[in-house]
Image (cartoon, rainbow, N blue to C red; front, top):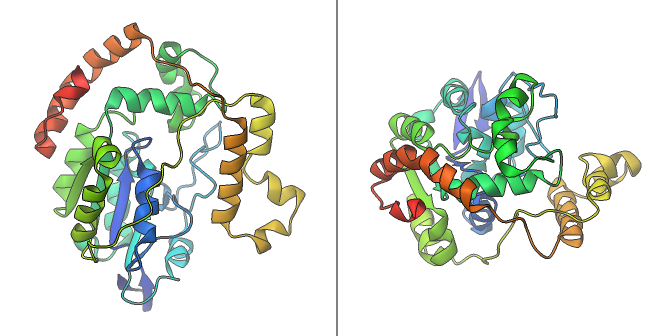
Length: 312
């Protein structure tokens, strides 16, 4: 949507896809981007509302992707190519993390002059599976502990300034951020990972309708950003280090858009992917079932859907 800010006409989002991480947000953002009436930046996650005017200083770096925008006018520049009349969206999973969602909502209200009109899209996954998937993703990087030990290490890691991507449980407590978004933004739509997996045509038709674009459009469905553990981990980390290609070949930034550079890294990830991934131990699954039980029941009430399968 077009807004007036200090005498300037800027383009800001009509909707935000806020998470949860490892619940299909990358695929969902891609299906939204394919719609001819929707504009989304090529960079999936800008994280502006999580860190507006407050650049993070995590000891591990932020680990949230190749881009992190903290300046309002820079954020607006990412959205400025949107054609007139397009529905503008942005997707950042940091907006749903338990350490950041309150700040995100405050920043949306502070920086978006028409925040009351904003539509919010949320997709949720079984919190037990989501937590383990987040853990598996970080095995490619700094994570070296077994799953249960990594969970228990978070409090100390948080004190040491680690990025919240290593808080595997933090992204799986849904009720509190979900309640806050629904309370603040009346136009909030919630889907489940199972919807995306089992009936993507229905999900996208319903979502397009929610966003007031042609619901008859059919995107190309494909699975993106699966969790993986690489072989030759040190070499993988070197080749996928943010900014490595640009520092060795400075001309790459001017020749290839960021989206294509990200796709190059994804291809590297595919080359290093193991044939199998770690599996969650039964005792860890039972522990998480008990831990998440009350939150699942609260979430079930908030969205009006039966989530008993998550507790089986």
